[in-house]
Amino acid sequence: MKEDFFNDTLENKEVLIQPNEGETFTMNGISFTFKLTSELSNDQLGVYEIVLAPRAIGAKLHYHRFMDETFIVNKGTLTLFTGAKGNKHLIGPGTVAYAPRFTPHGFQNDTDEEVRLTLLFNPSQKREGFFRGLYETLNSDTIDPEKYLKLYNKYDSFPVDTSNMLPIRDQ
Image (cartoon, rainbow, N blue to C red; front, side, top):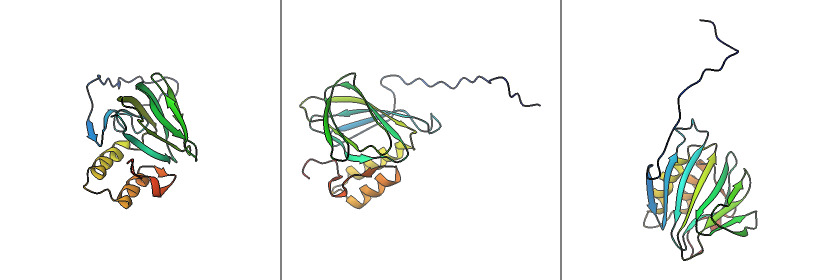
C-alpha cells in the first residue's frame, strides 16, 4: 500500500476525565489528583488538580530545565513566588500564571482557607512518578533531604537553594 502524503488520517483518541475521576494522593495538607497523565498524552501534557489546606506549602523555589509549568487558580488565594529572589505574588481565582523553563517558582497557601488549583506540565516528563515519589518521601517519619533532592532532579526539578528546599514551614 502506498503511503498517502497529502491527506490526514483522523483518529478517535479523545480523553474525557470527569470532575471526581483520577488517582488521588493526600499528604501534609496537600492532595493531588492525576487528571491527564503522561501515559494518556504521549508524555506531551500533564494536568493535575491540587488542593492546598490552609498554610500548606506546595513547593519551595525551584525551576525546570525541560518543561514549562502553568498554574490556574480555581479557588482561594495562592501565594506564588517567582524569580531567583522569590518575588511574592498573591493570585486568585481565574488567574493563570506561566513559569517557562529556567524560571524559578514556588507556591504555597498563606491563608486560612483552602486553595484549589490546576497545574499543567508541558511536556509532562512522566510527572506522575515525581508525585508518587513525593508521596513516599514526605510520608516518611523523617524527610531525607538527599532522597528528596534525588527525586527532584530525576523529574526535572532543581531547587534554587538546596538548604531551603523541603516543603515545610519550620526552615
